[in-house]
Length: 114
Length: 112
Image (cartoon, rainbow over the protein chains, first blue to last red):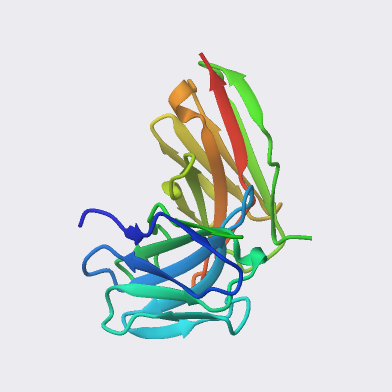
């Protein structure tokens, strides 16, 4: 597709539920990033993939967060046993080059934990 | 103290005004400086991308970087109501796979 596609756009989860958020990057993009954006804040880095390799997961806030990109294209961010503090917009971004910060972002998944 | 500081606003200006948006930072390793625009319920969209110090102009937008003062600016000339959005500064160190560090964003409102 022409842009980065994320699904679902909105997700309401009960506290303790597991959720899976999907990202379809621009075809052929090598680099893929996940960011978390709390209300009224800037995005904060979660994790980075270069093709299928997860090279940096230093931003994942706890071991309840897990991301994968098994074939180097689609990525899934999974959150286990969701907590209220996980409520945020989860943004996916991709880039055609290894070192280039002009990412293309998706519109995000807004997660609300109740 | 956050690595990148940005006044949250909101900043309200009349149509046609010149807008100045700013960020300060503390990490001397930052070499790449970006400005993103984010409309409500949308992802950030890249506006300006600069490397190291200096100025860059693109249409109505001018980005300035002063690494000695750890200060970056975005100027918008002839502001339009369609410029109403949140503006995020972002910075990177330049290593492969290194993440962007964002400011908290400034909300801009341009009144017709």
